[in-house]
Length: 319
Image (cartoon, rainbow, N blue to C red):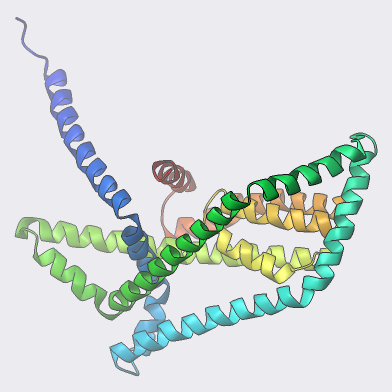
């Protein structure tokens, strides 16, 4: 029997080690999937910690650490509630006008679809509306069960948010001590490497979080100004939706702008909706070719291609 070549021996040694590492990673992700509410809560707590670490440290110079953490969290919560209240008042103030504009817009859309090049039969459009009504009436129990299920999911979301707030409080209060305790539990030969890797990972995570906030705020300002000058109703709520959607890379911003395009189509007609669709393309180009390379490359020190592939791989792994 001929001897095994050194290349094959080396490849085999790396292969079984990769199989062991892959199995360990699979087990970790399986556990995270089994307890995904806890994993999401801890992740959100880390995001809040990354955003509020600097102001908490700044306040900690003047007041005790516990008071600084409490003031930072309460101030951030009040700011968020104030923004949501402003959005709610804007929606309530324009609800009557918006409802009338939607009815007129839907009528104009129907008339537009009846003309060339579509030439849809008016009876077909009314038939679609009647079919929707019949479906809702015949599947009322299903709709109600879905609503109840949605209420149950809302309870899960509120529970995750409460746990995330609880985690962020202790992360801000003593996250460095918690990490030091974790490193102390490791063998002495591994403590130094794990400490360095943890600091590098936290620095990258913090940079990415700050960078995505800058990108989201820039997108929201551009969208808000564009919708305001186009006369699209609910410009401020739609801009806020764009801000939160921008935290989902690649697909978040187009989805939010698609909602804005639907509002523009119903309220202002096809021309303004077409301009909003063009805005989706322009802002996507600005975000992908200007903001991400400038902001993320400095904040994360990673190539945009690496970030994009990582996001897509994570989305696929999470279903």
